[in-house]
Image (cartoon, rainbow, N blue to C red; front, top):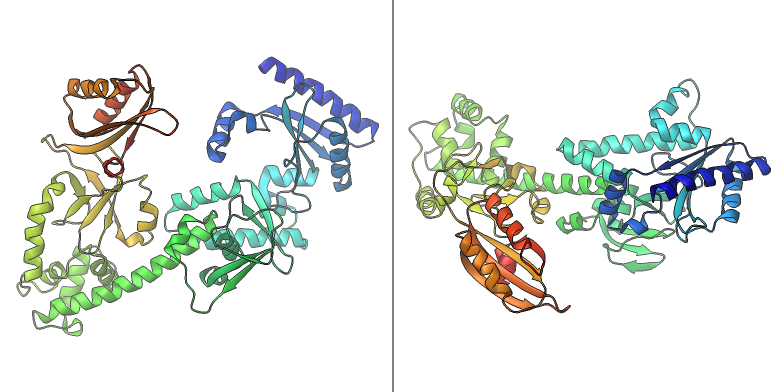
Length: 515
């Protein structure tokens, strides 16, 4: 395969040079092979097979004018047939970051596809070195309309960065936006909006303006009403319908594709959630203070400030938000601010009694910054020791612990004040945790017995086991087992994979097995 590609690079390069020379087009031509890492990453990111990666082999033509770019494209298509749907004109419709080039994928005589990118030298400089380097030479002159659009894009990125609390989240979203295929859609007035493939009207609304996004209540695509989760296609004309009292929905987080839209939605929901938490915390504090004959205004300033320092809180608003989210109990704050005056309420007594019943999870998970609090392991993802975990402060049910890849986590952690650092405790006791295992096998007798024998050898208790046949005729086995940690599960899965006839083994939630 490598020898064939090396020969193809040489042959195609020669043909391109001859044809450009015949047609008096000055062009600098180069070819390259995409790295194995880049191919694998593209396959994973886009969910495609290797046969669908059309730029394993790619050529670049750098010409002296835009006219020659289009002339070269026509010549190339007269030599090799283009792959349908693989011609992209980023010269006529540049990307938001000012990137310009013609992309086409064609089929060689040997049946191997390859990509050709055609651009001018100026476009190449911008693509290779970025907007800042391009503008370095423009500092004393006026920016063109295209360059002004680039400045607006950078300002939009800066604005978007301000809405993202976590630098890693900003970096992840920006990279996802920059390296996805684009769709070009239009406003009713004909302005082009660039969005990543799979973007929805909600992404479009936030690309137009933050307030348009917040107030979005519906959308028309090409004159027809469509659901907000509808993926947009190249050339669509999109009109956003708004209402004055509209506001983002948490459900939108599951349908947007751009980092900008996701950051704006999360920032809005965080703000609303914090306002609610502050109001709830104020009510809770007033109620607790009344028990000791005080009001917020009569709370001793020295005691209040000392309590805030002890709790590592910057302001009373931060305190009220922490009370509202359940990170701190009102009784605990009052006991710090007014030592000797706070009395134990019936509610806090009940909380402690419930804690004794459910508190066994406190011995398994350490919650940073909180002392005596309820801890429960989320049933949606069923974390076990060794899993990377995140804590979420619930209202009235203590801290819920989820795996970092739990599908419910993004929606839960819109309010980042509720996220709390947790880690598995180093306990000498050998606790047991339920885990679900799904096995796909060749459909033959004795499948379940072999898996059961293996679990017995590992001294693992089985809580539930079932065998069946899927619609495609494959045998299936589902098991709920009691394990000590992630390493034991991984060892078990590896041993099951070695059983003759087993095709696939995956870990699932016990809830999925029982459902």
